[in-house]
Length: 199
Image (tube, rainbow, N blue to C red; front, side, top):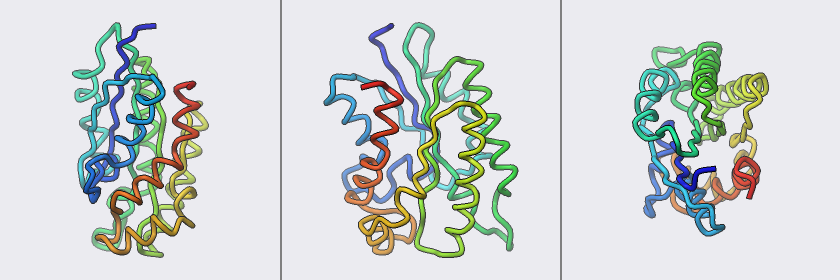
């Protein structure tokens, strides 16, 4: 196995770590944890604020192909869904069945390229009605990942009762936490992350 390990974190503002004054988000913290454990990674953060699954589907392959060359050990983490469930003119920006189909297309394309995938589900926000839509999408995403044999880290369930997350999101913009919230997010993802890498 090559010592050149590369990973792309592909998704939305939560991937980008919006709101974190330490500029790490959960993806940076997971990368740092791997490094501290001796698993050196070249990590690329491809999170774009406001992007839905449809936006990501249109950009991710070219972005990843430029960063994941043949001969390297290449992996991809996807995470999105909150923006899909935002209402626009009374309807979700991307309907749940379409978002699930987008995820299936992403996973299929990654499988063709032999890039192992970890999917991180959408986290809760400070809005009960929005959270019901996120929870529905979370369930659909888990089902799609099961069909593809891809590990799914359902962050909605991880964070739904997490007071640090809820308090920081509420104190922020209603969606994004600060550093402590992202630290809790990363800690919840750590078992799935470590199992995926095998360390």
